[in-house]
Image 1: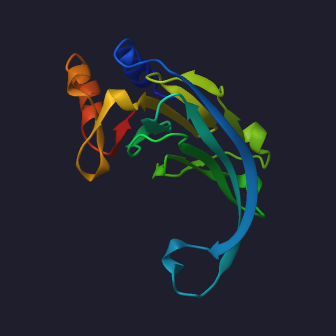
Image 2: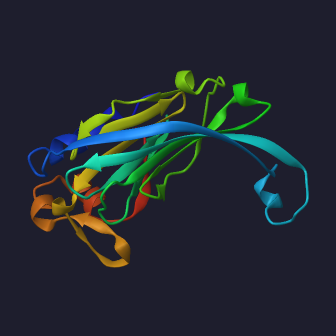
Length: 206
């Protein structure tokens, strides 16, 4: 599974030379937990069965950079790419990749979920063999701000992020950031719109 390469390549190219390219490193580890939950969302809060056992496999990582950072996350499928902006810049922000599967049916697929600094993207179905290292491949741990970085890929979904240093953005109302006006002025219209307006959305493949 790969991203819409033209979209992320275009964003990376547009930001090159506009924002500082600072080194970023992700440090994370996998954990596995088990829980019992409702079989369907329609049962939520009812206290009634039936219930199912679910295994949650998470890769939680801390982002290290010389500057507080924020960013925009992307989750791509064959049909569309979802995107969501994180909140205000912070030091040592967190991101997470997770797979959720029925405990007795792990080889029948899982839900692939991702978050960047608490901003969650929609979960999508992916193939899952029960072996997380084979089913979910992590990208390099080192990259730079202002460039699209593929964090993790699975057969059915892929997660990428563009991180931006605090000096490149301005906070607006409702804790929503936008690229500084003087930096965004020279960008193509659709790129400028993505980096200066809205909190989340979806872009159809095509």
